[in-house]
Amino acid sequence: MNRLTTKLLTTAVLMLAATAAFAHPGHDHSTNGLISGLLHPLLGLDHLLAMAAIGFWSVRQGDLMKRATPLFVVGGMILGAGIAFAGIALPGVETGIVLSVMVAGILIAAMAKLPTAIGGTLVAAFMVFHGHAHGTEMPAGAALAAYLVGFSIATLAITFAGRGLGALLMKADNRIARGVGVALAGTGAALMLG
Image 1 (tube, rainbow, N blue to C red):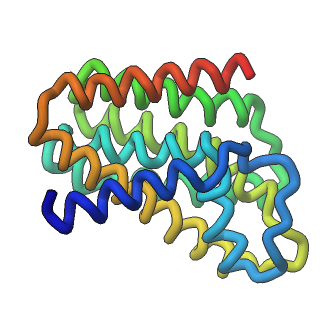
Image 2 (image 1 turned 60 degrees about the horizontal axis):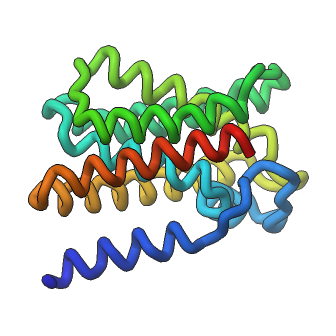
C-alpha cells in the first residue's frame, strides 16, 4: 500500500471514528469561533458522511462538476448559515441533512453522473440544510467570521478526504464503490428512522 493510500484510509477511519453523535443538539465547543467552526462538522456522523459522500461521488462526475463541487458545498453551507444568522427558520433541516446522506449514497451506488446544473443545485441545496444547522448552533460569543471560516475549512477537508477515497476506489472494482454507496444510503435511512 503506498503512502497516499495509507494517509487517505487513515483519514477516513479517523473521521468516521470521531463520534456517532449528531452535531446538532447544543454543542458548546468554546467561545472561539474558529475552533467551534472547525469542530462542528467533525462531531456529527450525519454531517461527516454527507460531506465525505459528496466528495466521493464528485470523482466520477464531469470535469466542471468535479472542479466546482467544493464551491457548491461551501456556497450552500454559507448560504444556509446566513439564513440561520438572519433568524429565518428553515423547515425540515434534520430531514434535509439525513436525506443528503441517503441521496449521496444512492448516487454513488448507482454510479450516477449528473449534469453540472443539476448536480450542483442538488449539492448546494443539501448543504443549505447543513449550513443552517451550523448557523443555528453557533456558540454564544463566538466570532461570526471565524466560525464561518472554521466550518468552511472543516467542510472542505471532509469533502476532499471523501474525494481522495473515491479516487482511490475508482481504480478498484466498482463493486466496492457501489458497496460504499449502499452503506451510506442505508446509514442515511437508519438515521432517518432513529
